[in-house]
Length: 134
Image 1 (cartoon, helix red, strand yellow):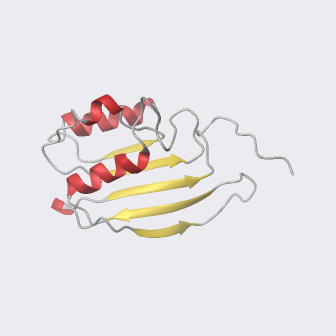
Image 2: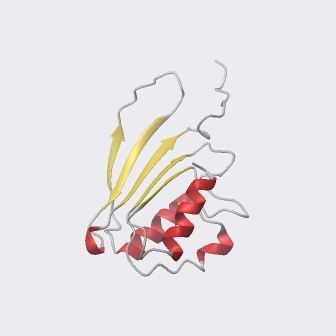
């Protein structure tokens, strides 16, 4: 999670010949590192990220690449379809103020897939998030 997600992307960029796939929860790619990302092989990716994450903002900031751009990088690098199959994730907790969507970009080289779970109005896991008062 978070720093581990950043490390996962770094490993995919630099050691794709030794990494079968990566998963990132609330991680991204540091903007200055995106241009240095030089994988040799397709890397299946799953990214789980909340749109209300204040630690690693979903839409990026001066340091972090926006999550849609990270997903797009891997979709294009892996040669996946740029049109995802989007499904709503069942809302098993109706009191937390968030919902989720699953985006699957398939058809990549060597069977690679990129998946993105977009947690709408979800913050950083494990950190309290204030819900608007009624």
